[in-house]
Image (tube, rainbow, N blue to C red; front, side, top):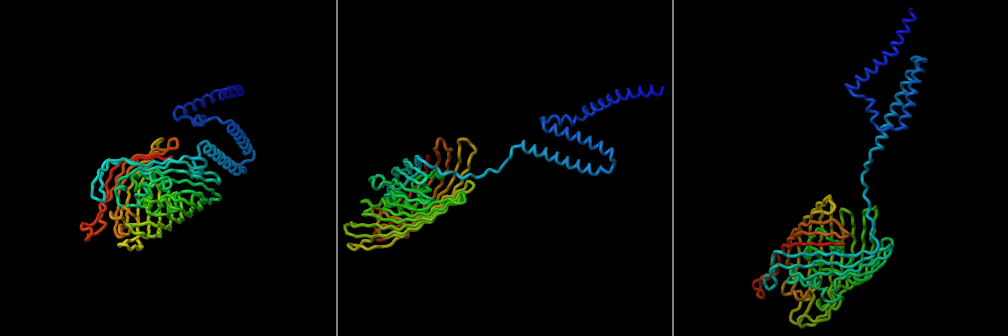
Length: 492
């Protein structure tokens, strides 16, 4: 009888207890959700599942062993379990990290030097809407005109050891220079119209080996950072703002025919050292300049970096003449010595070019039939701070605003506008200045062309450059100009 009751009880335990356990699991799932289902929601990993099963089997085996050994093996098993759990957590963490994309700090890649044949195109100009100017005779003019202030057309080739370049500088007349008193500035503007021998072109060939170059032909003198103006820059227009001030004012030729040698090498991926020396005959050997020939020696030492560029340049030039001035035969051998410090800083959209040039040179003073040499000097200071805001766009590049200030100590008076060698027409003590502002919108490079359009304001106030005297009772003025113009440009 007792055996029968125990048998019935056993059957009850085998059927009723599992039913109760299942019901309890359903209750917990309905109320609080199943943790096991959340685990199953993860992507199935066959390798991880097999390893997990192996670990569970080992845990069951270890548990059975503990039952046989008693409490003595509990501490060792607990330590082993702790190590296994840590390995399991590390493995899951490693797998999670592998699944997530790794975010690395982008490395700055050094831009490769472009080699091979490349066209050179640069055009900057504008159309004056409002403004006025006066000539030396006080005649007033309106400023409704357009002009190309800088236009480079040509091509260059850069090989492993061969370099060559040929460009022509195309410009149009500009009343601010044509009607002014500076004969030096006039010849730089007009030289392209006075024959190919004096034209503003740059054509040369040469070799380059271990960052050392040798060039021969007609080229920009090795002086300061003159070539930094041969790009769109901040978008300034008008002749005074598109080219180096020392070249526009005429105290250095923009091209010389001769030879050049130097070094331009980059070290530590971002620092560039520049050393240059050139010798040649300038474009002022012409009837317009009343000179037979001119010989110049130029040099510079510079450092270039992404955030800062600087150079110091020098020139020594001689003008030779055996012609007459005012009916008097004069044999002239006049020297010119110049030094310039050119700097440019740029960071986080801000840009600040700053140039300082000092020149001392000889002129001829004629009194009756007596001619003698006299020394004169000139100081040029130019600053153009600006800021450019860049866009994250497929076609819009940036919007830039900048201001410009030029100071000129030593100017030509109207009486000397016809001959730059006449000491009586040059006033070292007189000065003029210009101030302006520009705002421009730049478009990103499309098919190799980068362009901009904007508006420029520039004013050169009236300045008294000759005091009252018996010969000039009212004194003499540089009447300057005012202009508000639409400007545009493109480069390749």
